[in-house]
Length: 180
Image (tube, rainbow, N blue to C red; front, side, top):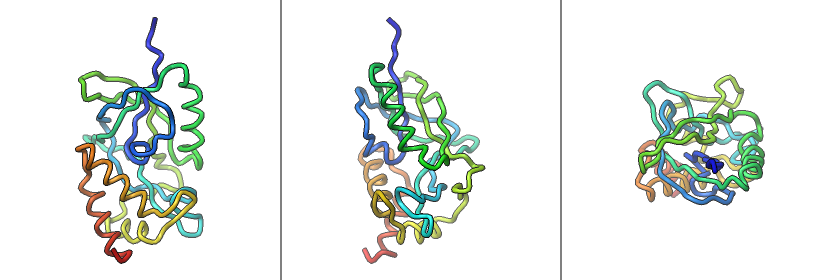
């Protein structure tokens, strides 16, 4: 019987709030992309009047992003994709892709991955870290404060042993800008 599992790659909030049932969860590496606050958030962590920033996978030669791959049983793959599309494609700034990821156990699997569409108006790659911190410190949207999203992601990455130096710096800077 062929394996009908669906793999999903998480690099930001999917790590700490997947929102879908899954079996195995493995550390994984996605080549060709890096985690970046390069998407203006006008729904979840900001508003159209005062956008926040959320993480996206931005393509870059030689880059790689460490995250988690979630294995979803085949019986619930369709409903999981429906949930993910409603969550991740809310403004069409992400593109849904099937990308090869390397799992910590040495296997390589195709995983549903959401990457930034650089042609989308919400794309804002190349912002200086200080500018990112200023935006994150003041933004909030339907899912709460932008600062909370940053801090939760940085904390969970650190706990997994795949900390991100830029996210750690941003969390400290945003805390200073926001009064601690």
